[in-house]
Length: 112
Length: 114
Image (cartoon, rainbow over all chains, first blue to last red; front, side, top):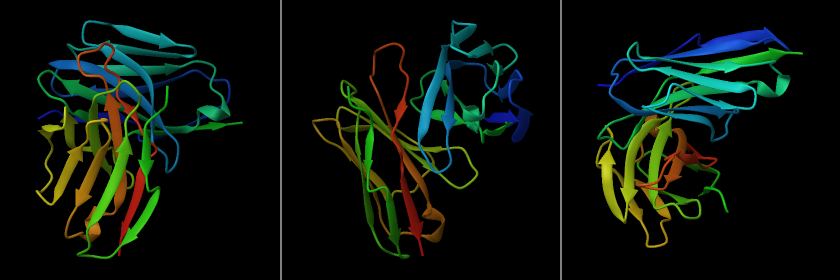
């Protein structure tokens, strides 16, 4: 059974700093991994999707990496801004399975 | 291109009642998935519909059921509501067979069971 863990559960950093969010998963036979952002009480916004054959994806100030063999992914946010404050969730989709398995998220606060 | 929409946004029910939540998928998408997100937790997969048939189900009892219509919109029905059903219900649409198969989520329906 796939399990996804995100550490830390909460993180506060001053504006302008670069930061890394971590995601680990127990079963390396994944089809893809997706990072989402969730604002309080809202739905999920897809940030980046990495297929199992890829090592990283970039979008603007965001870069996500994937290391299947070690069961890890990181989301790197450069030059953080107060608008980046949100909960960040990672989710994996296994081969032969339609569902996404989510971690419990990292709540990020950027201090102006 | 329209996004994923859900209705209603908020709902309050009492134990034992039944509820129907609705989702309209993003234009061009043929697959709808439903998730339950309890407070402080990650979303949990309920089930997925593709071409009007259930195509995968998570660890939820049969009182959670769904439908997908020819226009790919979907309903989630929950019977005999329990207090623990209080959560944010999210639907996500995607395009089966296409890459990338990013799932796009709606804003959710907040269900409170009293």
